[in-house]
Amino acid sequence: MNIRRKLRSHAEVHTGPLNDILFILLMFFLIAATLANPNVIKLSTPKAKGDTKTKQNVVVNIDTKDQYIVNGKVIPLNELRATLHPMIMKDSANATIAINADKTVAVDEVVAVMRIARELGARTVLMVDKSGVQ
Image (cartoon, rainbow, N blue to C red; front, top):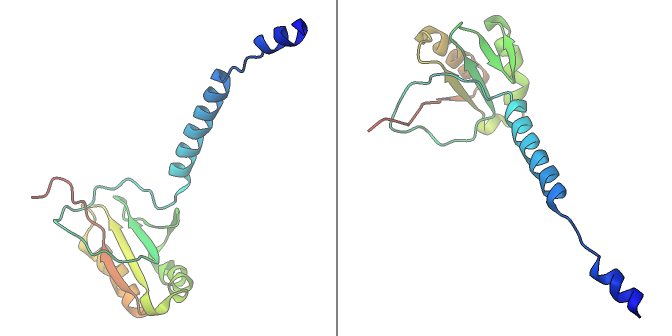
């Protein structure tokens, strides 16, 4: 009987290393999820009081170098229609293209995307920055 009591009193579970491993895994997955999203491109978007809340089938980013970026890939303007067509056809009745353009981009670049969207039968919305607007 003394042996059993002695064994039970020394049974301890140390969860410190397990907590450290779980924390490291959590941080890894948070960072990986942020980096893996192709639509996360840092742009300085125009400021506005509000924007249209609608489901976007695809996001077209236009950066400060006037490059069109779809799903993390730089697409030349002459190939943009062919790239967007299969994405739009998945839900052609409610197709929407969100344009995420840097505020320094010429309006002509934004209008080019809008023209392609109209040819494909899709609506367009312009993504804006609502912070700091009264």
